[in-house]
Length: 151
Image (cartoon, rainbow, N blue to C red; front, side, top):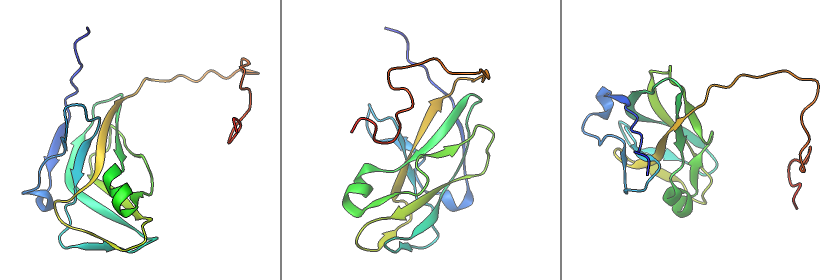
């Protein structure tokens, strides 16, 4: 069995994120680390509306990796909360605060409180890709079948 790769990511806690937990895995097999709301006061997200929520942290993702900010399934199921740009991408050269664009698709307003788990951060390896322009693409069984092509 190959040894598991460990990716080291530097993280800074910003002043408004002090006293909050660092992003962390909630179980041994979790693919994402939970991100916490670093709001100064409660933020109400009305149904059908969205709000940019700070997390109080900034990260230095290594080259050829990206951070993906994803919704939390429990918030989606219980309250209809998701992310407007899911997954949100954190490029390896970005050094600003990680923020979460929460969207309320639920039937009721939702109040985000400081320290609440609001999203997940997944660190994903990326290959370097070289595009080669050609006159035509090799055929496949699917061909140009797109949206809904399988029924």
